[in-house]
Amino acid sequence: MELNGLTLHYHPQEHFIEGKFSGVAIFETGLQAMQLIIAAIEKYDCPYVFVDVTETLSMSTTSENFEFGTNLMDLGLSDDRYRWSIYYKTDPHIYEFLYDLAKMQGINYLYIDKDKASAMKWLMQEKKA
View 1 (cartoon, rainbow, N blue to C red):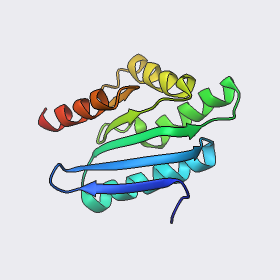
View 2: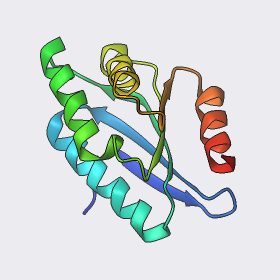
View 3: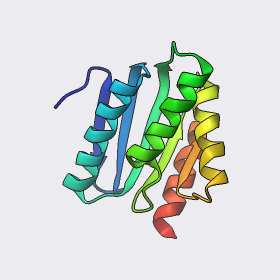
């Protein structure tokens, strides 16, 4: 399965998967992207994922974005076997909601930041923990 706008690359020396998604963030593409990322996690036996969504846009209403974010949590972002670091610039209402939702649920293996260096640093620290 492929998804337009999603690229995935495994970095064997650093042992992490880097993804970049550009396109419209809707449930269907989110589901497909999550399935492809989890397939890469299993293929490379690598639970460390850095996702760049700086070029992802949502045309949804706020309530639809909240539903989308909740669905992403159910699809794999709330799985404690994985470590997710998400770098974003646009659509803060989606990503800040995800981060707040994760914190409210006590999830400490999902990090979301507007600063790429901080997002990558967090992921690399998780590998050493």
